[in-house]
Length: 236
Length: 286
Picture 1 (cartoon, rainbow over the protein chains, first blue to last red):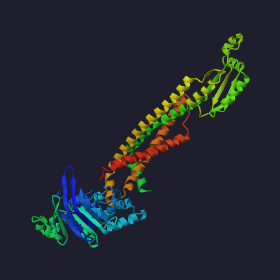
Picture 2 (cartoon, rainbow over the protein chains, first blue to last red; picture 1 turned 45 degrees about the horizontal axis):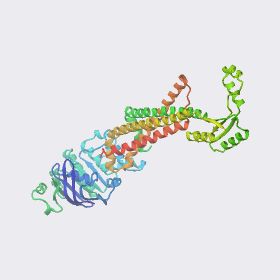
Picture 3 (cartoon, each protein chain N blue to C red; picture 1 turned 60 degrees about the horizontal axis):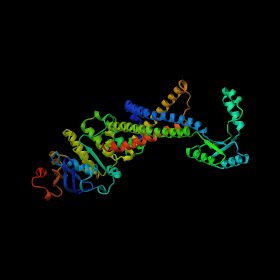
Picture 4 (cartoon, chains in turn yellow, green; picture 1 turned 90 degrees about the horizontal axis):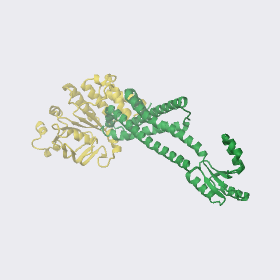
């Protein structure tokens, strides 16, 4: 489903953001991607989403290969990979329904199916009663649910989440993580970046990938390969 | 209504001052092109009238024989660019002069001998009155031994054609300059529109909208700006025409096909300019 092979990413000013990392996330798998700020979590997710190209190495996502795909075809990857962010990235001044409908409309859903499907997606994330509310009037947890509903618009097989609970209180965090696990139980692969160790402890059955200064230092699926000072290793 | 059209119209509704200003600037740029069209059309019409007067006159020696004249007329008529050849006898030349210059009646009455030569007036086909043709026919006429002199107003024919070339070149240079300005204005307006909608564009790409879909509203916006600008330019050109025609001197309005083509070109131009701008500025929204 997701396969990174010896991937490195360098930026002209910042230097190396990722150094020779390799891992796979299989179909229906749930994995936390953790590490300190600047460790390369967001860069990894952007590369998987093909928002950027790796400097070296190869990424395969849902059957698409970073070395072979043309820029004109990137949209095909994006429809197979949902993405949610810490800051929700919703369109202010529009309702929850309109935000989800927007994603459906711009990806070619026939006009008469847009509203029913948007309503169904909001129901799926438990937000049907707030469909008509402006997103800027919703709580953080509710806004993140709208973002998840939007990410599900194209029925993706992979969900990427970049610190999705970073702006949420404990209760909202639990609600969102529960939602991710529900989606995962339905067969969706989930890769969630977080540095919330407590969250990972509570979900100890999930796989953990840890980055440190752009290197993959721990993978709970292959614990023998993890470094001796792995913070997550200490946590688990 | 499609998403692209709705968004293109919404751009005008969301920022009416900005988009209106952009259209107005495009309109002003195209107005200058329109004025050039008006001037060019009237210049062309005037030049065409002047061109009609281009003819080659071969003055004949007094001792020319009738059969020689008939032979020359036949030979000149065989040239494809020649519409007709008229023989003007000495007597008719004097008659014409009397009619043309009534103030000199006494001078003509005192003449003992008719001093005016007979001539062959060679008229050219419409569309064939070029410098080269006039020169060539003048050379053919000069070659007859009984022809004393050939005139075709060399100086003013040369000036006429030079004027025409200068007019065409000026219109091309100024038109191109203003087209570049209009393209820059459309590009700037679209850059602002893209910046204003960067969140939407970002989300469109995030969820997998095709690039063509992302671009379409902006191309339509360019087409609308071109259409509005073209219509504004046409209206301003017409008002100018009415003003000049009513208060200064009589001029002709450009043909409807020119006006239609002008607006169509403005629309195509708007789309082309926005296409370039969108390609360039969409990269800034990642």
